[in-house]
Length: 420
Image (tube, rainbow, N blue to C red; front, side, top):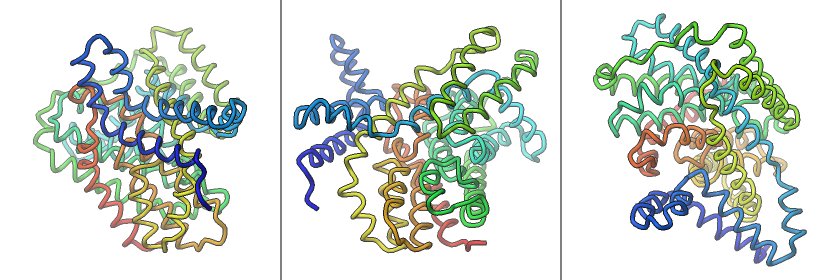
């Protein structure tokens, strides 16, 4: 089928959004060079704004080419549950009580490990927290891991260690959510239709992902052991700061949002209850990460709007591949489009072999750490950590370099290890 004029325009805008994503540093330099319009350049230099901005351009173009009613109808036809969910889970997971609970869990694991405290802390933050994402969802795990690592590691590390840690974190979060069928967005898109239940995920994905996560975390910890040992000790959490009942209530809020992940009315109600509780006990809260959460939701919402017009070229490209080529093709394509979009398009095609299904999903999660847009939780981590990078900008090339070796480890595990 030949693409329509609107589809061609949408493809061009999608390409422009990708170019914009990889060149936000240009706008930051313009903000310093032209202070009269620094606010506009800073806005366009925000990675999280990029896809939302170009999605708005698409809607304007759609209204001009068709009618305003058609443009609004297209918006209404998009499913924004995932952006809303990521916003809700980020805000709750980033609260002081939940973060304190996660820090206590990490500290317990640190004490049980035969490693120096700083090395054990980095290893657990990059291994155990991503694997925990299989139960609390990947966006929540990304938020917790990024907040745990932000000050003790990213604020003190060299540029090389920052990007290596970011690459391992993004890759491990992407594959670490595959122990269950509900935590990783690309798995969630196909789990019901393809009958990827808990047993299937553990035997085909989970144990392989766990091995890759442990190897990646251990390799980084050992390779940068000298620099990590020289870092100032992280401040221990204040056990008296948040009462246990309030901590338990916050964990219930987190669980409630996860349980109702497919029902926006329900999980947004839980979020509102959480915000009411946070307002009632301000002495036990830090600043809620509402701005960061909204920016990430705007980014993902823009991806949903722009991505809805890319099926005409993306689906035929995937369907022309065999199982082996679709694995590597999905890994590469994930770098330029959200991995959940790839698996969703695959789920629309009937008659796929089991080998093809496995290759598509495993390839999608394998490439989830290569770029900021590759996996839905990545913008959340980038939003939390970007202030610890030079000029507040995460280099796309630096992230790609940092994620390259962890991605190769994931490829080896998913391609070479047998299914149980």
